[in-house]
Length: 255
Image 1 (cartoon, rainbow, N blue to C red):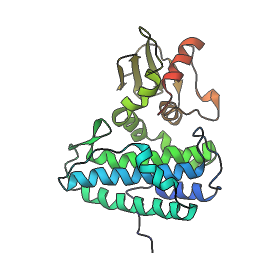
Image 2: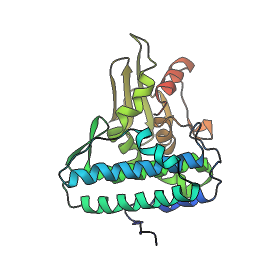
Image 3: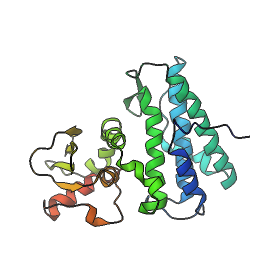
Image 4: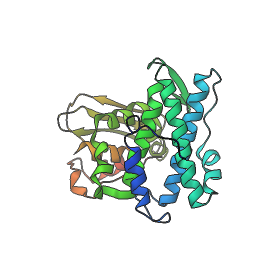
């Protein structure tokens, strides 16, 4: 019998699994070059690593973060049925570790992939992965899967907890001396302010000031930060010109 996963701690879990079950494992997704099966393996690896690193911290035995290949390759070798069971098992394990971590100060820093994350961000990061990759499976067609993209915590987690690695891939493509500054604006909220050159990147929430590089809705802005595009391109508006807008969108290529 499968262990229970708390719907209140991970409210995005059930919509994600239902989206997966409505499609063939070999079906394509909005995540370039990945099938549904690839996403399941990635999610199982995410849950396993988040639980492993946070659990080790709680035991006072910190460990380093493994790379994607090290944690996902054994999962990709499983049959479809065993991979599905592995996803459930690892999510249940993360649920248990996240429950134990609720007694730890929210300001506690834990090493994670070359940076640190606050203890509550571990569960939150898995929630974000479920939302984002659920959208990769359904696109804009399933409101239950995509609706959390517009929630403020999705933007703040993307900027504060994941912002630096989200810009790293795009920044590698910048030429020496090239610099990009941009403001991604959503009405009645703070801008996402981005600055990048070949050596340094910054990303932060900032009060709306000056012209926006692009304006969109909250959900589409999260998709852009993760290198995705909404199905309807008219949700993104800009008068910055094709050169500047193109450079910004190349910078926001995800990882």
